[in-house]
Length: 273
Image (cartoon, rainbow, N blue to C red; front, side):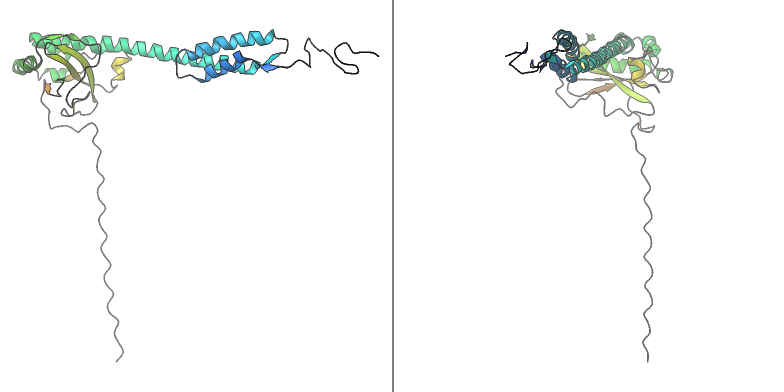
């Protein structure tokens, strides 16, 4: 009795293109893992891991002679991993640029301004402020501001790299200093002899705070007021709050519609007599 070369008698068994059709196949674990890591993009390293697993999966599948499948999954994992990696790189570059911009355009000018206030340097303080606000800086106002800050916090020691733990109701933006027009607040952390504090630098610029953080412009020349907040929420301002101006977040009220007058009662119908 004749026997086929690849099996039992009478069984037709062919090998085409180096692939045995009777050999069981399975999905590559590397391909599946690559897709999973490519989809999990919430962590910075997952995209890179997905790319590496996908490339390895494609190489293993191509050498498996048909025993492994999942080439499409591996390719998808590589693509998703690449997108995730590029996105995280862009986020990292943006954060680094923002930090450098904040340090150069906000952090260092605030340090110089605080040191000028402590020295009583009227010209130095005025040079860093908005020209309109600088005209209102008087020796008496600067001395009173410096003495009040020194009495509450002591001498200025330097800037902080971490957020201090506040005990009171203080927030990153003062609720007692009204903002008008295009004004906004930049909080900067500082350390004094008697504790940490937040220096609230109030600036006026149509570009907003992002103009100074991601741009090349310094807050020098845009400062309209300086408020120093202690850990208990106590605030000391260079300029006292003014009642003039339109609040920044004021919402115009809509006039009430007049109530329509009630229609007159119809005259009673006369009875027949």
